[in-house]
Image (tube, rainbow, N blue to C red; front, side, top):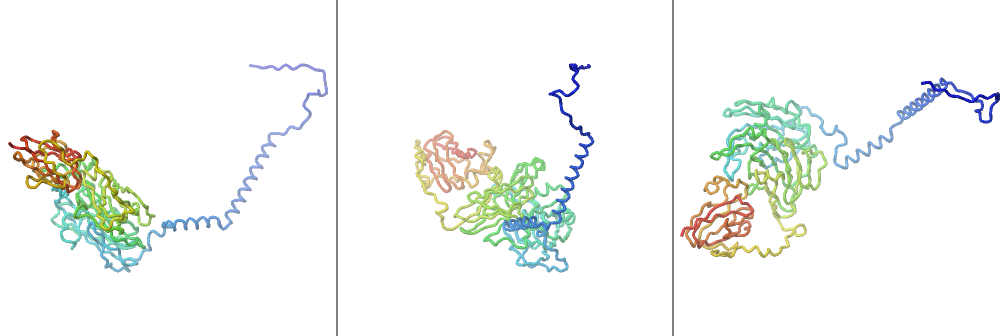
Length: 539
């Protein structure tokens, strides 16, 4: 479309009062030239500034670097990466160490009493066999492990394997023998070793073979080792794992106790005649039947508990061998006063931790102070693993009471906690006063362990795990039966028909009931309703 602009025609030849005065017109080329000159000037200024900066002595940078190094030094960290790996002393110049370098769980070998590197000689042999993994139920399974050549007598499982202790910069001269009577090839993959597969390929031994490697320990820390032959998950799940401590050049401060603890998992089928076979599918499904400390349920409880005094400091070197689960390491009734995450001993420790996370194949180093007399319960705080699968240990602290830290101030019991209900036929005995004579029933240690509500062996004498010393008790009319709680947990003796109820019985307490009517009386424990038994009263 064409637009036409019509202007009025005028005869005026000079400028009108509203016309634009004469002015110069700059060419477009002139403007472009000016822009280029401005850009060139800016580039020249930038080049001059960079030249001046590069010619300085970087005083400000030096100040910043100095301050950062000072801060890291105060925090206990290494200011330069070159300080982590020590200077390499040639193997030909190293003596053979005479320090004790190995121990069996839960013991730790003492720290090396030397300030220079050495050759540390360690000899393992592979052990294969069948061993008890749950002493309370007597369940056994096939285990494979490591033990010391010429080590302590009585080591038949080798699960966990011995703990090795050396110093950063040392050379580990490691020899492994697979005795002729064994069935499977095995090896060792050291997480502390810098080299192909952590040494696994060069330590692979068939039955009847022996091999040796020499490896430089470059990094301080507490590291896992394990078998890495063929079906690696199966070898680890059978028990082939342990720990190696590499002390830094400046070792950790001395403490009153040092202990070696390994968490691990067993994958088994349901026991038949006391033997639980290995379940490879459960490994893939990451569903262990047992999660344990130091190779078996109960290895750190009761007579096997760790012990310390009020005011003492203990250090635990901990490995989570897995195979699959992370560990949530928690001391019930205390704290970790110091935690070296990932067992990296040059790291700044965390102070006052409640629970520390340890991945499968990793480790940690934790310290605890005995503050008050008590039994600290060591658990994986994914608590089904503790209470249902076995990951429980005890640290018994003895000494004088510390009321400024902890004191039970008492209080009256609720009025409805009368020990004996006033039903007809009830003897009415107090908890702590069992009736003389009559029949005795023990509430068994470990009876609170969870089991199916309708277990087929519930009322059989061979029930596993057992709840009561007698599952079906036959008595004549007029018999007084006394129950004693020999477990550590509270229990009750509660009739299914409501005819009697002991209330809660604490550990060691007893309660009696006189049966003056014939009949069959089923009873259970209120806090643990899978605990069931019967009294059959005959007239």
